[in-house]
Length: 172
Image 1 (cartoon, one colour):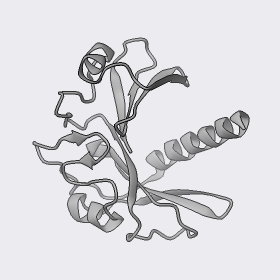
Image 2 (image 1 turned 30 degrees about the vertical axis):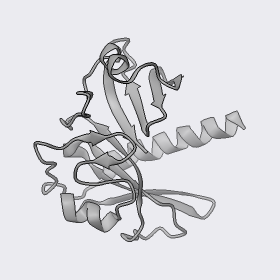
Image 3 (image 1 turned 90 degrees about the vertical axis):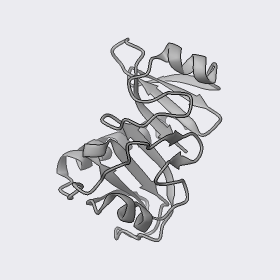
C-alpha cells in the first residue's frame, strides 16, 4: 500500500513538474488583490474550495489546462505560475477540461504574497507557524522537505534546505 502511494505521489510530482514547463497558457490577467488572504480550510479571498473552474477563470483569467490520468480518472489543475497559485478540480472521466467541476484544494507558492489572519505566508518560518497555529497534527518528511498538516484544512511545506521556511501552503 505504501509502495503504491509512493509511486502515485512520485508520478503526480513528475506530471505536475512537466506541466509547469510545458504549459503555455496566458496568465497575464491573473492578479490576486493586494488584500488577498489565505483562509485555512476555505481557500483564498478570491476563490473558496468548492468554487468552479469557471469562477477561477473569471477571477484570474484563462490559463492552460494541465491534467494527468490514471485508470480512466482524470485530474485537472489550473496553474498560474506568475501568481504562485494552482487550483485542483474534482476528478472526472475525461481528458477535456470541465469548468463546472469544483476546486477541491489549492497550492500557494512564491510569488503569492497573501497571508493568513495570523500573518503566515510564503517565507514564514517554522517557529512563526508554530507560534500562530501550534504543533501540527501530523508532520512528515517528503523528498527532503517537511510537511506539517493542521486539521484546520492547511498543509504547510517547509524548504528542503534546512532553513525551515514555508515554500508552499496547501488549502483543502
